Image (cartoon, rainbow, N blue to C red):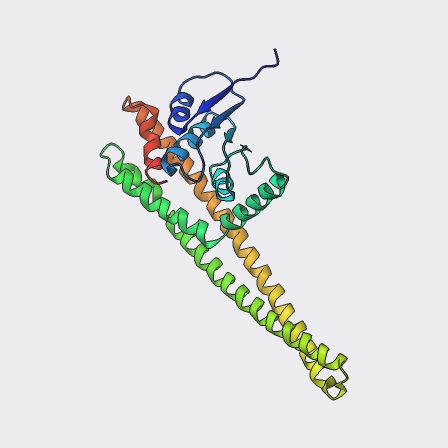
Length: 257
């Protein structure tokens, strides 16, 4: 009583064992470094854990890159030298913040676009699944539009930030000059202050627009994930009809990872 089971192993072992009925598991413990293992193996294990509704624990987190990679796999728990230090909690928070920013950023959107292309290619190459490419029609356009919007907004945000930084430096120099007794520069000081306040307002507006674009991008990517699940369900139904094992449906997504 009180004991709970955990499945431990490398990516191939977890993916294979989770595909069978293992009973109720506390967690699936991935014993490979997130940053060095092949993405195909890692994603197969993570996908299997998700389907089995088993929390994923990624062990041997040695670097910050390992931590970010584990979060991208959807790990609920992490362990290893990095997170066992006094900075562990801060590093996890930083990695989560980076992942959230990436999720709504142009990079994450571009990765989803590439994944769509690779999934389509994998399905089109299999005669038993080729007709299911119709399910992916219309997937790419929303992601492309959201990425372009984010890129424009982030460029504007960066430009506004640069202008604010310049105005702030000019104001600081004028304040130093005024404090040194150059009272004749009072009018220039007021002009610098007005320029800085205007630049600050413009930056705040640009940052808000960029945040809104990233939030819309996150919604678009969430919709893409739902569509992916619908495609996976169709592939699994096809696998059942063709008497194929579950790995047949998985490989279309593994090949895209």
